[in-house]
Length: 273
Image (cartoon, rainbow, N blue to C red; front, side):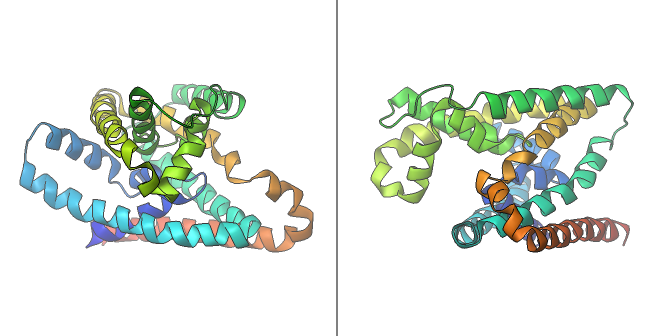
C-alpha cells in the first residue's frame, strides 16, 4: 500500500510541467530499487518478489497519471499562471531532497563541477536546440520506434525534460495528439511499444550499471540536468501575466514550496520511526 501511494504521487510527476516522475522516485528512495527490479525482470530473476514490488508501484503510477492528468489539464487550461507557479514551488522544494540523495554515498567538491557541467549542457540542449528536426506528422515504422524509445529515455532518466527531447526530434506535437486520441493512431501503437520496451531495457541496464559503479557521479549529472529544466515550468504566458497576478502567484509559490519541504520531513520522520 505504501508503494502504491508513492506510485500514485509519482503519477503527478509524469504529467506536471517540469517535474519528472523518476525524480520523485529518487526522493522516495525507490528509484534505485525500481531500476534494479526492471533489470531482474528482463532477465527473469526473482520474478515473484520483483512483481510484488513493481505491481503496486506501477499501478499507482498509472492511476495517478490518469487522474492527475485530467486535473492538471483542467488547471492549465483555466488557471495556467497559478498552476505553473504551484508546480514551480513544488519543484524548488524537491531540490534539497534530491541533493540529499546525491550525497547519500559520499560527496566531495569535485562533484560540483559535474553538476555545473550537466546544468550547462542541459540548458544548451533543452533550450537552444529545440526543433532541431521538422515536425513529424506521418511517421514511418522506424520513426515510430524512435518516438517510443525517446519517451522511455525521458521517463526513466531523472531530470530529462520529455517535452524538450520530443520537441527537438520533431515528435512532441505528434505525441500529444496520440495521448489525446489514441484510437486515431492505433497503427502506431505496436512500433511505439517496441521502441519503448527497447528503451526501457537498454536505459535501465545502463543506469543500473552506472549507479553500481559510480553512484555519486551519476546522480550529480542527473541533478544538474534536473536543475536545467526548472525554468521550463514557467511559460511565456506566466511572464507576461506576472504583473497582474504577482501577489497571488508568489503566495501560491511559497505555499507549494513549504508543502514540498514538509513532505520531505514526513519522509524523514517515517524512516526514523
